[in-house]
Image (tube, rainbow, N blue to C red; front, side):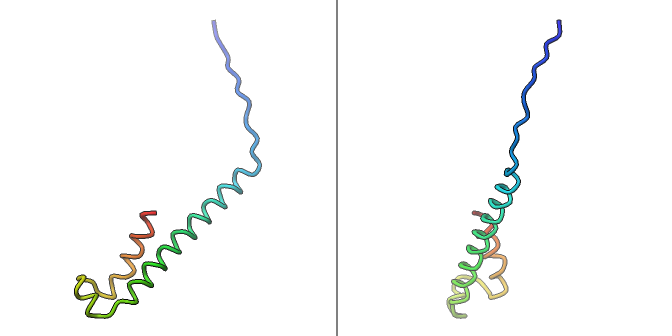
Length: 70
């Protein structure tokens, strides 16, 4: 004997809009974190950077890594 199970399709006309808004909010949070870390690193002088073993060329990668961890 065969059984058929029917499940009604859910109608969510605004699901794509909600997903888009969530993606934009996530992007904005990550960008804010990137900017915050980059600004904090930029405030350090060369001696402080040398003490940390960093150079100004590292700022982008450090800020990007921090933003990606959100």
